[in-house]
Length: 226
Image: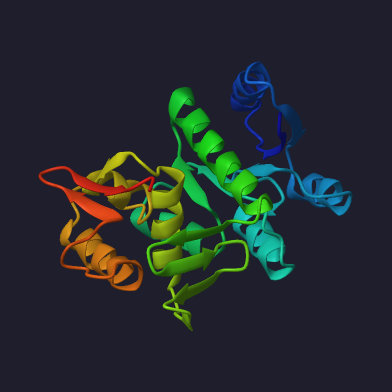
């Protein structure tokens, strides 16, 4: 069970989300204004924050930025009618972990909620792992390759985290574009290939013959369990 703070002013959507989340065993606190949410957050951080943007007393982006500036690492999933690429990019840059435009299907929402909660549990467990010659501590956002520090960009961190969460599964380029870049599958999938090559350079002994981050011809990529 997770403690989830839902900040949303649409009464119909609130009822639907609250019932769905509770049916999955989660405890839900509902706020319809930013002021209410700020008061709740003073008493402690939830396991997950579901955040609307267009609220009666302000913009949810401001609350997201405030939390990140305070050092909060609580996962934030933005739920909003602002569905343009620019709006999604703004939300992620403000510190959101994921972004789901309205209207959305509840099964997709729950899949994203579960993914964010898995990530949180993994971080709480230390988030420390070795992949080939790459040693990563995601909770501290530190990485070493052959014992030398490497700098990963925000997108590289997001990509690596997503691959780790789905370790052992084949993930298509289209899915990576949607979930990591928040872009449509019509975007150039070559972008994904470039970032995969960068990660391989740090984790593989021979990036031309990868053992850990492998290509699945015609589909995408898989981060091996080994």
